[in-house]
Image (cartoon, rainbow, N blue to C red; front, side):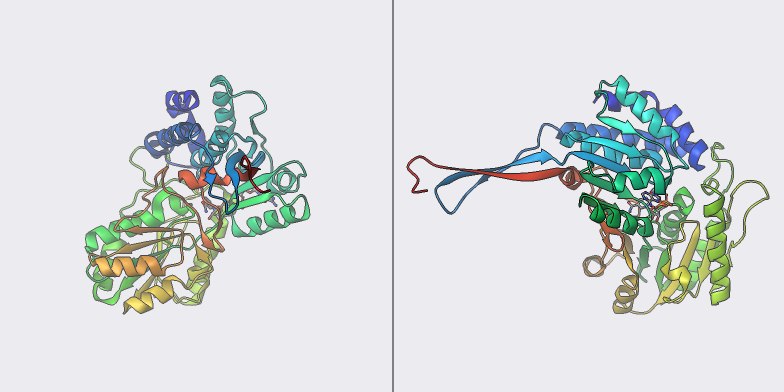
Length: 412
Ligand code: NAD
């Protein structure tokens, strides 16, 4: 609770550090990321004294029960896109579970993690419990995933690195692995949707945090009856979107995190053009200083195009037209990922059917990005396994021990 209080007292400093490191909007950090980080710490602090096992009804005359014990030493390896959110999502349930831990922030964004470690010390968390080690992936991250004395690695990042981490865990001490990986999430918009609302959700779904968000609505499937009207509105909104200095309160999109990401996004845009998708808007860098990219939409995208299958992790949307609910479900699932999905419709039967039929860990109906510290967050398929947030995240840092003893006069 004291740690959460100190985060609240240092909102501006933490938001500034994340803006400098990642190009994130200062205004959003100040009113969303950092206050929510404090609330996440508070949520798990409240859970710390409510961890218990069960009394078992054993088939023979035994008194049997389970204990939930901390899994041990945890290595958290986190990405750069939400440095504060990721830090607390990993650290607070592990602390509540009673684990000790090493956090390796992404090399692009180490500043806020170091500041959180400082605040944890001020809050009275004993030395050695919460440790931050900065460094590069293959060296500092690799040392964690292959370490013989680390009991679990909790990773958020790309699917390729997730694979390497699993291999390193398997080859070392078979540590427990939790992986929150990439996504290519569909937003499915049906004919009965309010086009004004649907186009705004699709816009935010792809442009929030400059598209550097694993659950971005990077594939937007629109039913044919409203497709033309939707496309017109979306284009207008995209072209009015303000890109620029992340410290300017009027700006809605800052620069991409670094040169590598900036170039990767542009190479996907070039791919989209070569693959024959229609460039509806954007498609170029903005200005000649800084890693800014125009909000970009490709229309007439086919499922097998690279821009429909690969995670671009930037402000680039793949727009598709569909006819029937069956087609929408089939195409929404036509991806190796399974992180999130959105559905926009007024028809309850359609919403319920589609939400059950999409293989993804998070479904948002008539909304998008409905994050909450109480909502488990994680993937199906190659988006990984294990959950952050909610009580499921607490349980992943605990293991179950069964204890049994014969009852008095038992025939044992
Ligand atoms: P990344 O996989 O390159 O790096 C993530 C972290 O892993 C960094 O700290 C990095 O230093 C470390 N790392 C890199 N190579 C390593 C290795 N060989 N061994 C151990 N650690 C290593 O990912 P990124 O580019 O920083 O982040 C973007 C990716 O993260 C995207 O794919 C995105 O979808 C994903 N992501 C997923 C979620 C989720 O909850 N599912 C949330 C945010 C980001």
